[in-house]
Structures are given as C-alpha cells and as structure tokens.
Image 1: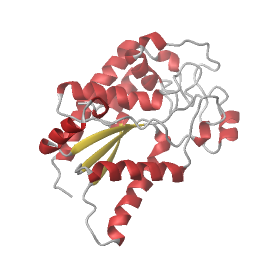
Image 2: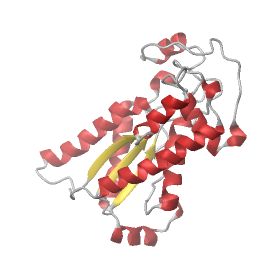
Image 3: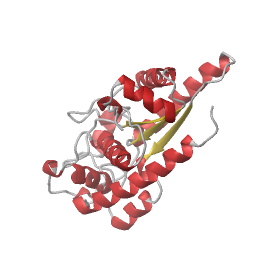
Image 4: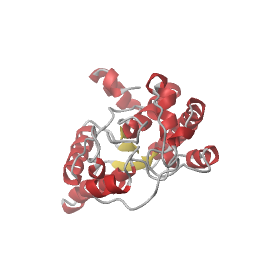
Length: 248
C-alpha cells in the first residue's frame, strides 16, 4: 500500500490493523558517469514498492533529499545541511506519530545519511526524555544493503570492483527498474580509487569522475533483479519483526 496513492480514509483503516509505516530515504547526488542522480533514493523506493506488492506494508513518500554536501562539486547534486535534515526528519516523524503510527522504519539508500538520521532519532527521543513522557513511537534505520543476505549476494555478484560509491549493485538495481535510463561510459581507471570523504572540493579532487573504488560497468539488469527480489523479502521480514516488538 502506497501512502501517496491512498486517501485519508484508507490510511485511517490501515491504522486500525497496523501501526507501522516504512519511509524510503536517500539522496539526490552524483553517481559517477553512468549512475543516475536519484540512485540513492530510487534504490530504497524500488525495493519498498516491490515489497508491498505481496505484503501488508504501508510505504510512505520517499524522502529524496539527504546529506550530500561532499558531492556538491558535481552538477545536479542537491544537499541539506545536517541541521536542516534533522529538523525535516523530526517533522515527518511528528506528523506520522500524531496520526497514530507507533513504528516508523526508514529504509535508507545513502551511507552519508546514517549519522544524521541517527542524530535525528536521538533528538526526537530526547524531546520525550526531557519532558518526562513516553515518546509513543519507535524508530528504526535500515540500510537496504544490510537487509538479510543482500550484501553477501552483492559480494558474490561483484567480487572485484564493488567499491563504496557508484557501486555496481546500486547501479544494477536502478537498471532493473528503469532499463530505458541505462547509461554507458569508458572508465579510466576501470576500478576507481578509494580515500576519505570530507568536503566537496576535496572530494572532487580525489574522485574526479565521482566513483569510489567501483566499476559500475559490472552492473546488469539481471543482477539488479536478483538484488531487488532478495531485498524485498528481507524488508518484509524486518518490518514484521519491528511491528511485533512491544509497543513503545
């Protein structure tokens, strides 16, 4: 069930049987010469939308702008400051919790979001703690590549050249969902360098084409389909386990 394609009446009916919602969250940022700018929000959205086809899941709108300041040296990247990101996540959670959602799971597609999302969770819990009241909700962050079996599959599919940004696994997921948007390029070097992540100008100097340790040319539609199918299964299991936790 997709929240944005539902009415308020349908969401009210869903809340009568289920108090859990999944929010795909990612980033709009460069992903090398062939990776789509939306890769990091598209991957969790693709997986979540696939998962809800065969399970009683509610998927919220995709939070598609994240903390990507280090990619601002590449055209098309859009980033929030960490403080803005924290504030926005807080308002999303307060809105949903106010309607009665007790479990809110963020399915993340961007490693650069992790620290800020966790900080947002801490801010929300701190509001309750300092007010000496229950929060009334539980929050969970899950990276799509950490879903059961997904990272192991990606390592088998891409034993060399997987890297950490503009990876063939994330490129393959978007290729499966959007085959009409597949891009090609000649890479030099074939496998990109690795290094630290700091600010935008430093990142562009270290990684001129935007890749980090990866060879996106290894991606295929077929491998993307395998990843999506496994991740969707893992998401259903993860959401069910989260839903079955004691109420906050």
